[in-house]
Length: 330
Image (tube, rainbow, N blue to C red):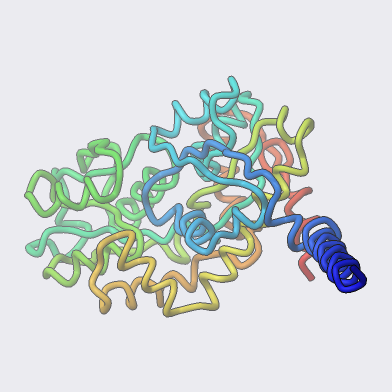
């Protein structure tokens, strides 16, 4: 009897210890609590292009999971994405560069809260027989749309080459960069602006690099947009998304092998092309999400020309939560 009682006491003691250990690990541990918390799905409209490399890095490295967020990606046009966001059908978009800033200036209740690129690093790529921008007179240039960074940058490169973008060339809106690249390869157009690393894909096939935009006409390439309503009602969630984006940008800049592998897997590139693209991306991806001040000013000047009214940065951009995140990450 004594032995049975001792065994029973031992058993109860072990169970009590295991319960204590469970409570210690699951309830008392912040790390464990973070693991078991609910993951919230958020809908994110994005361009499937280099403008979204920070977003894709964040997803690949599970930085959004760390924040309790799971992005569901939607590929739609910038205009539709921004309008859908305002009516609550989309939580975030990555169209906060040219298109988003212009839409905000025209009265859409949104703000850009994180700029993942310092500027739009675009190169005007042409068929092999063209060796200068001047030779594109009367020729077709494929662009994404008649608004945003690609359009304004293309106009700037054409103008710098001595041509009038309104009279001397024919611009065709053809959408995403991979579509434009295939149109160039097929001979449907004579030139198109391409970001890294797709310009290197064309160069590797013998196509001509006629001009690039760096230092000439820099504008924001993309930006994280949030509605004014969401900023007011759910700033903590917005901070979580921003934090994941900042971590992703820093990871991209400081982890070459993983970032090159992302290029290879996501864009189906060879390693040499991915390496070349990554090296150039180091100049454009922002380590803090604040973009580049001169590029923002240029974009605001463009908006003034388009709308006819003066636009202040605070009218279209709100870095309040981003600055809080940066301070907390120090």
